Length: 205
Image (cartoon, rainbow, N blue to C red; front, side, top):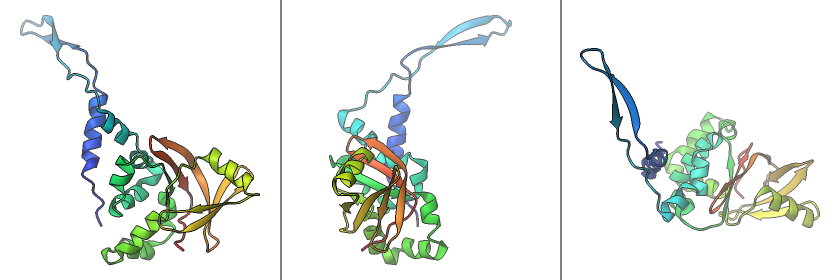
């Protein structure tokens, strides 16, 4: 299955404009008589992003896309038709995205079933189970866990429920089947939420 979104190219192009310097570059050329002359080569003006585009570039969707560990998860967000929402809406959202390795550990057959177009509803539900309609950075999670006497109940966008606990200083999110996923990487902040990387894929209720 191909995971292609039209805004991929748009975002990359926009970022390229940001990097442009509004200055002239001097080059040295050789004449036929081997004399050097200085030439001024114009460089495109620096483009200023609109406020809307600036927010999209710093959204949780883009943060997920540029996080190497979340390449598979980001592609699945696009397939589940969540990209535009996570790119453009205010949120806040929390993405608890399984890493590429976490998806690999599901095994080839299970991944093929998951990515089969006939099972699209199952994929959408699984991915929505890793999106939360709230802003839960690690500090907030720790505070809520402590306030809840060692446990905090999380409800995902799909309605799947998890329990957040602490193992030492590590935040662990456990699903109803007892699968305990640790936050491998946390607090990748966007303007409309936060992104965390999990070491396991959580089950759907």
